[in-house]
Length: 114
Length: 117
Image (cartoon, rainbow over all chains, first blue to last red; front, top):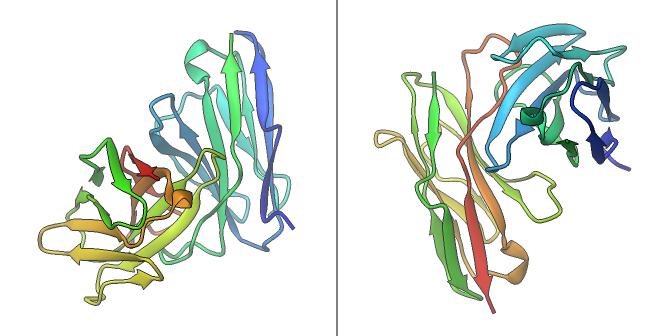
C-alpha cells in the first residue's frame, strides 16, 4: 500500500490557469507538508498542516493555498499559474509535530507551466 | 534561520569502494535532528539515516554511516561498498527542535552521486 500518494504525477498547463494537486496519506499521521523542488533540485518547505491548522507558511505567494478536508488529505491549490511555478511538488506527512518524527514523502508531482 | 551547505555538487566512485559526502550546517540551536535523504531518478525521497544532535554516537544503517561533529557543525555521510543502486541525489537536511510545531526540513542543495561500474 502506498503510504503517501499524490495525484496527478505529471501536470502540464498554461499560464493563468488554476490547478490543484491532491495528497493523501494512509499512515494515520497528524501532520502533512508541501515542499517545492525547483529546476536545480533545491527543496524548500512551503506549508505544513497539523490537525487542520496551518502551522507554518514560508514566503509563498498567496496564489498558493493548501486545503485540508480531513486529517488524511492536504491538497495544494494554485491560482493564476506562472512560468516560475514549474517545479516538482512533494507532499509529506509525519506522525506528530515533534522534531524526531520522520517525514514520509509522496512520489512528487511535476508541474510544467507553458 | 538555519542553513545547510553541501559543497560537492557531484561525486563519482567506483563500485564496491567507499565514498563520503559532505554536509555542513549553521544554527544557533543546541538540539536538532539531521538527516540524509536519497532521491533516485524515480524522484522518490527516501530517508537514508538520521542523527539526533544530543547523541554523541554516530548513526549507522548497514553500509551507511555518518560522521557527526557537533562543534564543527559537520554531518558527513559515508557509503561503504558502493553499489549501482546507490546512484542518486543525496540531500542533507536539518530539523529544529524548537519550532513549536510542525517545522519542515531545511535541505542542502544536494550531491549527485555517480557509481562507476
